[in-house]
Length: 224
Image (cartoon, rainbow, N blue to C red; front, top):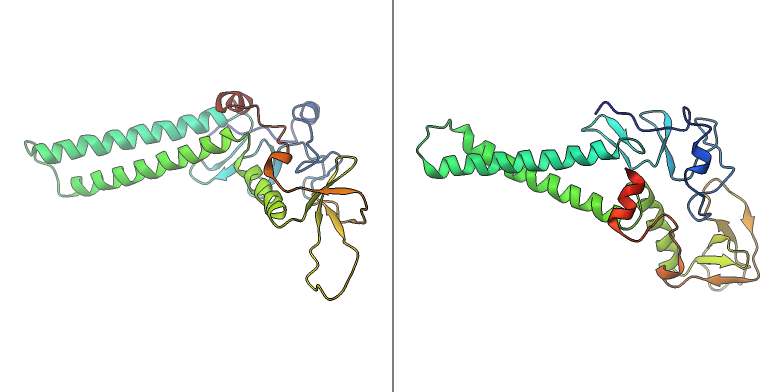
């Protein structure tokens, strides 16, 4: 894939207003440790491309490119085209083998099986990608939300009265009474906080995802 996604190095003026920071997984005034420029919301530094890619999903080895803002439409086209081509190859060779009225090389049956297997793999991958879009996430963000919800399931995700989000350090020794320590959900903030007025989050519905527009199509329009 020749179309490169947008990155923070060549879009310094426009990226700041593209997506707002949710202050749960993305925070303002955060500087990339590698690029040394402000990290836009919904961006991720790719160690292969050596840039902070906007709306980064993942680095695709098959496309030899990062998938991000500016080339999602080509990525999904790539997936759909491959699914259709592999499915056609599988069905066509299978029918020719079954009919038996055409002399085919011995490898034709093997090729048909391979086409079928890869068609299923690519179709499943396409479905998984679209299911992530339906949730208003990218693959990169799915990992971040998974971590946040893991802390919630363990009873260690809290929100203070100002709406800031923290992880509560679990007390592993119940015989010793120590004050709870809190850490921001911002991985760039290593400050240890002490909170007195906070709410423990018990349900995923209490965690807002401002990037979810409510439907697959609305979320897809943001990507495209």
